[in-house]
Amino acid sequence: MNDTKNSDPQNQGPLRGVRVIDLTRIIVGPFCTLQLADLGAEVIKIERPGHGDDTRHMKPPAQGGEAHFYLAFNRNKKSVAIDLKAKEGRALIDNLLKEAHVVIENFRPGVTKRLGLDYDSIKDRHPHLIYCSISSYGQTGMMSHRPGLDPVLQAEMGLMSLNGVPDGEPMRHPLSLTDLYTGLYASTAISAAIVAQRDSGQGQHIDLSLMKGALGALGNMAQYYFASGENPPRLGNGFPTASPVGAFRGSDGGMFYLACGTDKLFNTLATKALDRPDLLEDERYNTNSARVQNRDSLMALLTDAFATDTRDNWVAHIQKAGAPAGPVRGISEALESPEVAEAGMVTTVDHPTAGELRMMASPLKLSGTPTATPVAPPLLGQHTDEVLTELLNLDAAALAALRESNVIG
Image (cartoon, rainbow, N blue to C red):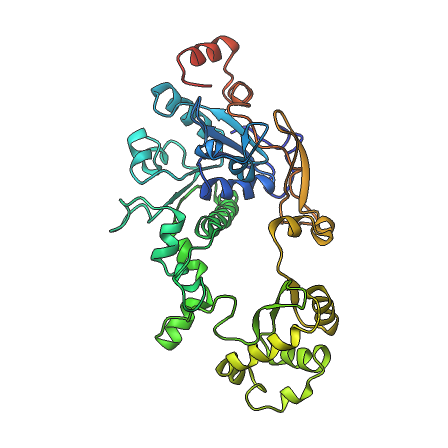
C-alpha cells in the first residue's frame, strides 16, 4: 500500500495518510466521508461515468451548473468516474482497494455481492481493509430487503411523532436527521476501526443502518418511554420535561427562543431578567416539576411579559442576566451573523465552474492537527486520470482504451 502522507498538499489533519474508497451517494455516505476528508483522509469518490452521484442532478438551486445538494456534501474529495457494471471497472476498484485503508458503500444489500465487491468476497484478498456498509435496515434481518429513505425512517422509528404542534399531525424534520446521525455514527466507527487497524494490521466489517441511526437519535425520548411506559407528548416549540422552554414574540413581532430547563436558570430569569422574584415563591412555579405541571399558565404569563419590548431587546436583556435565549432566525440571517463569521464556519473556495463558492466549513476544530484546508467539491471524473496513474500506474494508452470502452469517464 502506498503512503498517502505526501501525495496531496491539501492533505492534513489527524487522518492524514488514510486513503478511503468512497462508493456512496446521496447524503448518508457522502456525509460520512466528508467528515473523514475534513479530518485529512484522502477520499476517492467513485462515480458513474456520465451521471455521477444522484445529487448532481438535484437542482435548482445550482451555482455554475453544479447542484447545491452535491456541493453541500462533497468538499475535499477526489472524483473518479468508473463503471462498476463493467468487468474492467470492477477490476480497477479491486486494485484500488489494495492501496486503500477504508472502503464505504451504501448500496441496497445484495448489490455489492452481485458485483463481487461485498465484504465476504474481498476480505481474504484485502484483510487489512476496513469495510463499512450503510443500508436502510442492515445487511441481514427481516427488514434488510426493504428500500428506505430518511423521511420513511423518521416516520417508522418515532422521530416524526415528536415533531409538530400539539394538536396537529406528526411532521418530519426537513433536515435529513437520520442520514446525518447515521453518517456521523459511521465516521466515528471508521475512526475507531482505523485505530484498531494500526494496532493489528487487520480490517473489519462495519454494518450500519438508517434504522439504527434513527433509533440512536431518539436520545432521552427513548428513555422517557422506558421510564414512563408512555409516548412523549408532542409540544411544538416546547419540551416535555422542562419549562419554560419555548418561542415567544416581542412587541415588534420578532420571535425568540427561551430555554430555562433548570431551577437555577429559571431563578435567573425570574429575578434578574423579569424582576419577578415572587414567581419563586409561587408553588406553581418554584420547581421544574411544578412548572411542567403548570406549563400553560406560566407560558401565558411570560407571553404577556415579553410583549412589552422588542425581540432583540429581550434577547440582549435575558442573555445579560445569564439565561439562554436567542432570536429565531432564517437561514440567511443565521449564516450572515457576526458570530458565525467569527467562528469561521463559512468559507470561500474557488470552483472550476461556479467561481467563488461560499460553503460551510468543518465544525471540527483540533489545535494540534487542524482539519484539511477546504477544497471545492470535484467535477465529475475530475481526478480519474490522476488517481489511476498515481495509484495503478496506468499509462496514457491504457487510460485512453478504458475511456474509449466507457469504463472510465
